Image 1 (cartoon, one colour):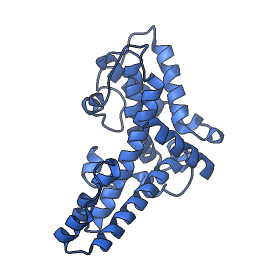
Image 2 (cartoon, rainbow, N blue to C red):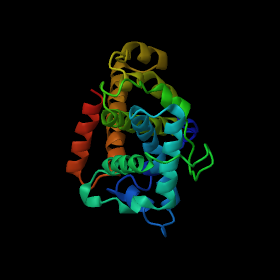
Image 3 (spheres, rainbow, N blue to C red):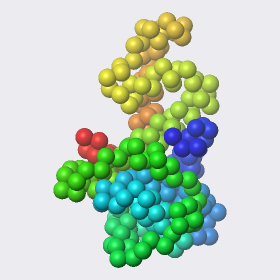
Length: 249
C-alpha cells in the first residue's frame, strides 16, 4: 500500500477528476494547467507497477528493470509525452504500453545512463513490493509480458478502489465495519458471517447484510470511477471492465 493510501488520503482521481471522462489524462498532458503536477503523479503512481512487471517479464534483470522503469517515467514527465495520448483511441493503458515498447526498443543497444534514484521523479516507486508480485518464467512460457501487464493493471485498479473505499469508511467513522466486511470484497472464499458480525457490533443481521450490500455497491462504483478517468465513454468503461476480469482470470 502506498504512503498516500496508508495515510487515508483520497486520490486526485477520486475527487476533482472522478466524474469527467479522460480528464485525468487531459490534465496530465496540459502544461499550463495548475493540476498537471498532481494528475501526472496520479497517473504515474497508478501505472508504474504494471509497466515494471512488463519489463521484468521481457527478461530484464531486477536492476535493469528498475532503471528502465525510472528512466521511462523520467522521460515521460520531462517531455510531456502524455499530451500525445489520443482521446479517440480511448485506452490510456494501451498508449502507455506502446510507449514502453518503443522505449525498450530504442534502449536495446544503449547503456542505461540513469543512476538509480537520480532521475526526475514525482513519486516513490516501491520496487521491492512490486517484485514480490512477479513470477519471472522462461520467455516462451505463459503468461506473456503483455498478459502480465494486463493483470497488474487490473490489480492496481482494484487496489485503488479498495484504498478509496477504506478512506471513505475511515473518514465517516466506520473503520470497524469496513474491517469486518471488506475481506469478502477481495476473497470470495471469505463470505461475511453476518450473524457473528451483528452480535459483535450490536446490529441486526439484516442491518449487517444491508451494510455489506452497500459496501459491495460502492466498491463497484469506485472501480468504474477509476476506469472512467482514462477512457472516453460508457461503452469503453464496459469494455475495460471486461478486460479487467479477463486479465484476472
